[in-house]
Amino acid sequence: MRTPRPLPPSVRLPLTVRRARVAGLPAGRLRRADLEAPLRGVRWRRGTPRTPRDLAIAAAPLIPEGAVFSHQTAAILYGIPLPARLERSEVLHVTTPAPARAKQARGFAGHSRRLDPHERRTVSGAPVTSPARTWCDLAASLGTADLVAAGDHLLRDRERPALATRSELADALAGLPRGTVGVRRLREALPLLDGGSDSRKESLLRYELVTVGITWLHVNPTVHDRRGRRIGRVDLVDELRRTAIEYEGDQHRTDPAQWRRDVERHRRLMADGWLLIRVTASDDLRVMAREIARILAARGAL
Image (tube, rainbow, N blue to C red; front, side, top):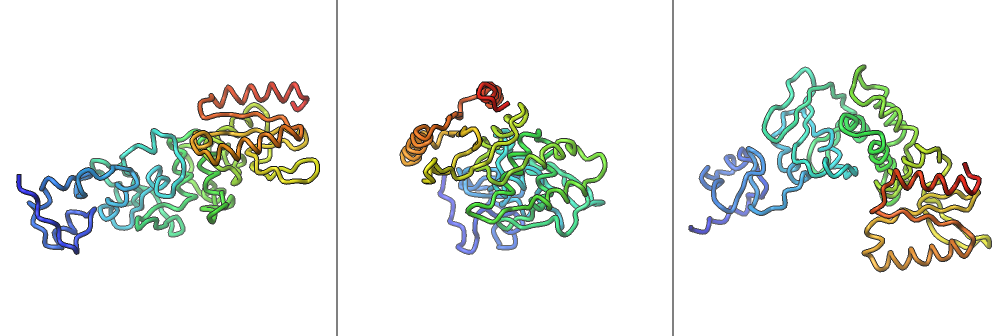
C-alpha cells in the first residue's frame, strides 16, 4: 500500500469533511489509511486518542447554527468531575434552541429547549451552555451526591476564578420549566454546596456525612496547634472537638512529596491531641460515613 501523500500545511487536523472540500482536498484523500472518522463528517489522524472532549471540539462545526453542547458534554468541556460512566461516554449532547428540532445523528443526543443569551458560553472554541445551565441539565442523569460534587467544582475559586456563583445556580434552578427532570435533586443539592472542596471524592464523602447527620464540619480550613503554629489545611474539620477527617486519593500514595507532607501533617495533628480519621480511595464512602458517625457519637459529638 502506498504511503498517503502528506496533507497540505494549511490543513489542520481534526477537520470536517466540509472544510476539506473548501480546502480543495479530493474525497479520496479523506479515505486513506492515515485518517479515520471518529464521527460522521469528521476526520482526524488514525490512532488519535479518542476522548469525549476531543470529539466535541472536533465536532463543533457540525452542530446546527445557534446550538450548543450541553449536559455531560458541556460538563466535560468545563472540566466538571463526573462519574466514570459519563466521563467515558462518546455520545455528544447538543441543545438546539426551541422550536427548532433537536439534532438527530449517530453519535449525538439531541435536545430542543429554550436557550437565553446568558446561557451560552464558548470553551476551547466550542459553543456550550453556561456553567449554571449545565449544572441544571446534569440533573437528568446525576443523583444528588454527584450534583453536589459538580456544584462544588463550579463554586471553587482557589487557583482559578469560580465558574459560577451560588446565586447563579439558584437563579438557573428557579428558571427551569415546570416538570423538568431532576428539579427535586437540584433543590436538595444546592444548600449543600461548598466551594472549599478540593475533589469530587471529597465532596461525595461530605455528602455522605451530611446524610448521617454530620452537618457542622468545616471544609479545608487551615488548622493551627494550641500554640498558634500552623499545621496545614485539613479536608474536613470539627474544631470544637478537635477531629480531622482526611480523604486520601491515589495521588496521596503515588506522589512521594505529597505522601511526606501528609505524614508530617498527620503527625503534628496527633501530637496536638487531634483525632485523625483517614478515608482512602478504596473505602466505601457510605460505610465510612456511618463509621465516622459512630466514632463521633462515642465522643459526644452526636
